[in-house]
Amino acid sequence: MADTTPVKAQLRELKSNGTEEVPNSAVPVQINPETLKVSYTNTLKQAENTSTNKNGTSAVQFLSQGTTKLSVQLWFDVTAVLPPAQAGVTDVRKLTQKIAYFMQAKPADNDPNTVVPPAVRFVWGTFQFDGLMESMEESLEFFSPDGVPLRASVTISLMKQSIQFAFASNGQSPGSTPPPGTAPLTPAPAGSSLANMVAGAGGSADWHAVAQANGIENPRLLPPGQLINLNASVSVGASASVNLGT
Image 1 (cartoon, rainbow, N blue to C red):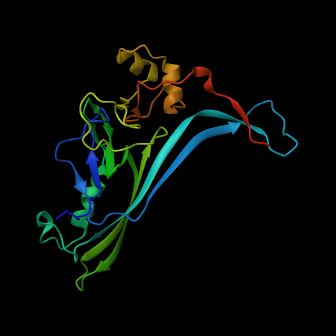
Image 2: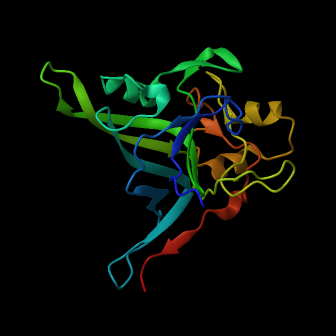
Image 3: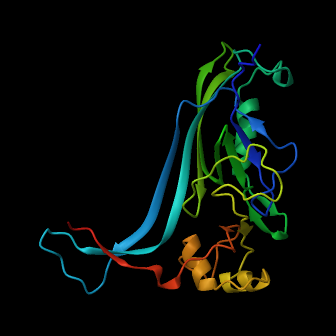
């Protein structure tokens, strides 16, 4: 008889290279989400020295790739049937603290002087999203007579500084082409510049093109822990004025 047990979505911690998962770090959700909201944002600005056209719209300039964000609402309830590993839990915050872990900064694997939140992978079936947890909102919904919280909703927002359309590998064999959106990411050390990072990686990529492909506005001073695909590149001349009029 076929197994009809639903696959649980998971949050998995990633190592500093942005692709390898930390062993035994998977945190399965208790109740699968109803929806996954993914938003894509590009950075645009009004082009300089252009006039408004006859339709009342003006030309805009594409500056760089922007960000991808994932928003998910999760539910936890200790009055429901819990797996054996969680048997006996009476306070729902014992479950939600495993999600809150991904909000807590810690020394980076490759630079103890840089403190960053752990990179996280959300995976559910064929859906995969790698990034950093930007925000977490917890609402305690139901309490026992003695004031112990029993049920909670947790809304998390994950952010990646590039446009990402990712698919889970589902046991992909080593050496095969990685699925879209799963390129290796390198966290920026404190006080680093993109030019130094590209040079240190030993590649031949132009750091201007890498900056544009990653949507980096200030390549001379990177925020500590910013995840960067040092192999990404686009033509430096790719910026173009796009007229929104018809």
